[in-house]
Length: 377
Ligand code: PLP
Image (tube, rainbow, N blue to C red; front, side, top):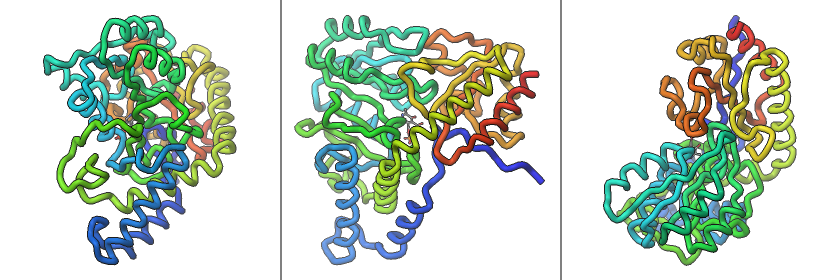
């Protein structure tokens, strides 16, 4: 009999909570009206959407009017970036080479237009943005939008968001942080953070795929990316993904209800993983600020040079271990990780991203360590 699989790719996507599936199924069975329709069936669907908006807003400490539902972080990122350039007068975007492809590829398309210029901050070998260079860029280029991710999805480094916010405020810049990896993982009081925009994808916190939200600070109106029927107060047209929205609000509610417990447990798994790997494979290197300012759900490591990069992920896969070799979107390809390249990591050492959730167990960590040891032998 095959051994059970070990899923350690939770930064890519997480398993759905049973309770989330249950509420979604209930909605699918009972709610069939279009939420924009004025009849009773439509009104019942609308009530669930607005109830979900209030839940999300309460858990993120923002006003319900600042929450806009969409299909996920990628769409939110595009809508916010294009909106800032098109409708909010941002002529410069200050970002880093560490961002998710959803940001980098959107900015690449924008760079074709003369009226917008993209500037990249320097990045240190520890994977953090250089604050002095960021300050320099902010002084040079205005009016600007700063677009820097809250937690890096490959190495887990966290942005010192309050310090970055101070710099933005001092230079009159707007601040957008891609919070896809942190919403659902921390208590996020968005009204207390110096952010103008944020995004979330429900599937990163045990909710459904294809459902997400944008936070847009009250008073800012970046306009819609998708135009049509005027849903989401003209910010995102198209019939709402009712079941996805209800599932996302339930998933965030459940994540927040046991957050501290969950954080302690996952931190323990990550520490165990580091200990086991270092004792079995002293030649490995952890990438990013692992012992410092980083997300507790992600561990990125480089294996010794002699390990064959091409067969590493397939061998882990055959052993029933699901991890990623970089960003989830690039997994399966052998393209070098743009994040590790930006940090100047050794390109000859193959890297693995291990990402944890509350569903992982200490035994799974030991299985992973044993398999990696045999692959490296
Ligand atoms: N931003 C970050 C930091 C991510 O980790 C991801 C997903 O991997 C995204 C954006 C895109 O999320 P989605 O694919 O759900 O739109």
